[in-house]
Image (cartoon, rainbow, N blue to C red; front, top):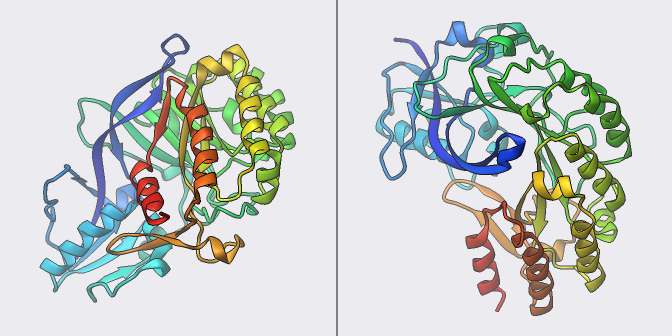
Length: 384
């Protein structure tokens, strides 16, 4: 065999919104990284399951193996494959290929990054109407992605370097026959000019859709227009990056929204019965007492429906290499054996107290997930 195409999947547990009366619940999902959906028939990709604490075997022998890599763990697997198969060429696509510049070490010479497999290998532009997905067999629900835009239209937040690739044509037609499950729309923030797409989704009870949006005045006005047209709010989940609910901190990070606008967006979305995921950034080194008081007022201003239908997630501040944050904040390195991801500030005692107080406001909610405890503990130990 000359060419083979590989993509990964794994079983994971996450907090996923259900029906309104169910609120949120921990659910097992078959999380698949469907990187070859635009060229499915040409590529006929091979699924590879990742099992915790078990070596992932190379599933096929070929001269060239194209691998869709979404997470650092995928890259670690490919490195082990390349080391054991020096005569095979491994071509890496997917989100990981976009952070290739962050590599800390030399990789095996038979690994090459490539962005845009359809254009490069099959000499065709991705046609959204050819999107296809046949998931691997699973006893639990399937979580997969669907492309709705590769770039954020704001592009000004200091903390962010998110880019999901080039813009492409969009079509909702393939979703009519897409697998049941949880559909993550892979866009950093859906442009308000495309909100009409949300009312055109196939709401047939087979899928729950998840879309990331911003929370400014333009988004608010477009939500007022589009939310009444959604036939079943339990099938559409919104996600919003709040970051930190203080106008002073929002201005500092150049978020381009106000706390008042954020609250209006939250209360409006949940008033129509939609589940909502809110994301926050913690471990700021410049908080004031007024910032934490603003956060308290923010949470106390949630409507009854917002308190019922909202989930909260937070993670530590990561400062990317080319960000405009103060250079003196770049004190702690986020890295693993392969990649350097960015810096973080080391907090003094006062800032630890203020950040912990903000986190305590989040932890009082029933549905909150925090994924960076180990990082935060390590940073604080280094800061002693």
